[in-house]
Structure formats: structure tokens, C-alpha cells
Length: 144
Image (tube, rainbow, N blue to C red; front, side, top):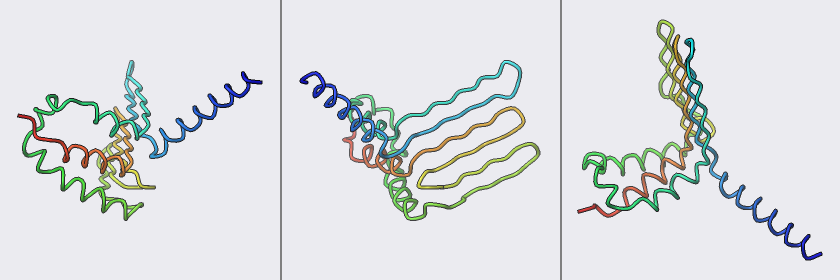
């Protein structure tokens, strides 16, 4: 009986941890090369991990962040906050000879889709993750 309670507790904890980890969605990067021997890379990462991992990056490692990038962080945060108000918007759609580029927001995720004769690249990032990263980086102390 005690073993069953321990197992139930472990399963419940695992289920809660999984739901919490995926509550913001996933970051998806898919790259497909259409030539002989081409690579197919598909990476899906829980979006909640990125802001969490940034808390563990030492301030010394942030020395390389250029001052211009630091100045752009409040703008990035403001853009992300505004994007959350518009869950379905297409920003860019360019069609050319054997090429297609599309940048949009669907279901509160920023999508970048690039297709040409040799490669397909699809990236999806939740808007809330972009905002959290911008807030985290903007709030960091400037390393000396």
C-alpha cells in the first residue's frame, strides 16, 4: 500500500512538472535540406526553459552583449507586449523565384518560414518567451 502511494505521488509530481514545463508552449526549429545527403534537423524545446536557463548564466558571460543590443532590449520587450495583443497577424510575405519568406504571429507564436529550392527553415517562438527573455536581459546588471 505504501509503495502504491509513493508511485502515485511520483506520477503526480512528474505530471505536474511536465504541465508546468510546457505551459508556455514550445520553441520549434525545423531545418530540411533538399539536396543529396542534406540534413534534417528538428528541435523542439519547452519555451519555459529558456528564461529559466538565463537566470543561471553568470554576469561575466554577458560582457559580450554590445551596448547597442542592450539599448534595444526595452524596444524588444515593448514589441513583444504589443504582439501579445494581436494573436494572428502576418508581417511579411515575400514570394520570389523558387523562394518564399513569411513572418507572422499565429496563436501567440512568432513564426518565421523560409522555403527555397534547397532548404526549408521553420522557426516558432512563443511571444511570451521573447518578452521574458527581453525582461531578464534588461534587468541584468551591466558587467564591469
